[in-house]
Amino acid sequence: MNKNEKMLPIIAGISSSIIFGFSFLFIKGALEMIDPIDLLALRFGIATLLLLILKAVGIIKINFEGKNLKPLLILSIFQPVLYFIFETLGVRSATTSEAGMMMAIIPIMVTCLAAIYLKEIPSKKQVLFIGVSLIGVISIVLASRSGNDKGTIWGIFFLFMAVICAAMLNILSRKSSVVFKPVETTFFMMCTGAVFFNVVSMGKHFITGTDIVYISLLGNESVLIAVLYLGILSSVIGFFLVNYALANMEASRAAIFGNLITVTSIAAGVLILKESFTIYQFMGCLMILLGVWGTNYYGEKKKLIQENNMRME
Image (cartoon, rainbow, N blue to C red):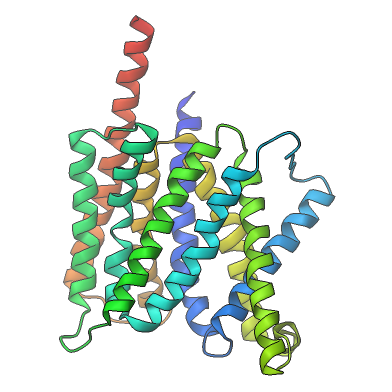
């Protein structure tokens, strides 16, 4: 693998984090006009429609023939189905600060699970830089936290369950990459999300006697723009980049890019929404960037040492 090929998974990890970081702006705006379940139904419905069109015209190749789909089904149950259910319940009950702090645990959870299930043991220096990145996220969260703003125990519980689901995506996608291409994993995930959330959405509207969400979408430009971003960029491209990164680097290295979402969301808030930017946020961002760099730098060195040892043997 040449230098350019080694850089592609890193570029994929950074790009997916930037896409996910900006997605919070669109989610926040859309949820003021649309129910969370309806938003998820539209998001994954459009994502699946786009992938089906790309498959029909031959731009992407999907081949599940003769392959055991059970690993992809299990992966898709964790992400997107369970993850988005737990995330929605958690954010509703807990504070944004607590949500940010819980999400920062994902790289730690992934590192532990990867060591157990994938036998990917990080070096001491990698663990150190993962910790630096985690401290950076927590610093940003604590700097913006108000003293009387505390969520419920149930909120923290649901967010912790979301963290487990996100960590399982990293592990299961890494394992399935042996059999399935990143685009196949992404395709299956989007289809599962589209079927599940649209069935739930239509069932809700049938019970309540309200119009289905696709009718209201046609007359609301803001919702349409948000759904197109979330469905095409965030779901299709974003998750493809995540699965590509996981197919080409250790799970613990790929997971650390998730902390860049915090940096991106802050940058989006400052540049677009004109939110304040404190010295604590600045220092936290620097620690996150340092942690991401260190984790990948020493991960690559460790990989080179292992490859050299294998050649010598």
